[in-house]
Image (cartoon, rainbow, N blue to C red):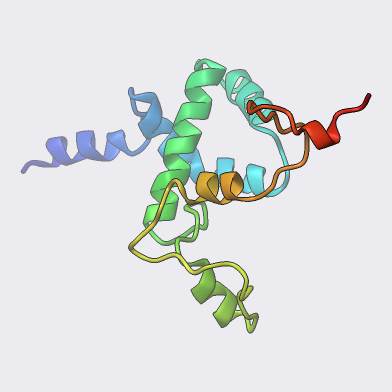
Length: 138
């Protein structure tokens, strides 16, 4: 490579990317710091607009969500929910509630409904059979 080709490559370092997600990815540490300080996405979006970055608020929110997921998948953040709550409780020195069943491979999605239908529920219970003559008044 000649020196001229390298200078064009070095010039890319100072140019903004043409794709907005790449631009936001390069600004992500500053955006994340502003979010950590308690600023809202709306305020950050307004500041980006004042800085000359034209992006709709909805698209900005979509890109921020994507960047949060990427950060969570890389192990640098906590934006991905923890899938092992019992292990986390044990690591923190707390014991799980013994009344709550532990999740296992045999999950019954209708267990909640079966449990509610099996109990005597409060309220009016209609009996469609013939009335008991001993309970009638008159």
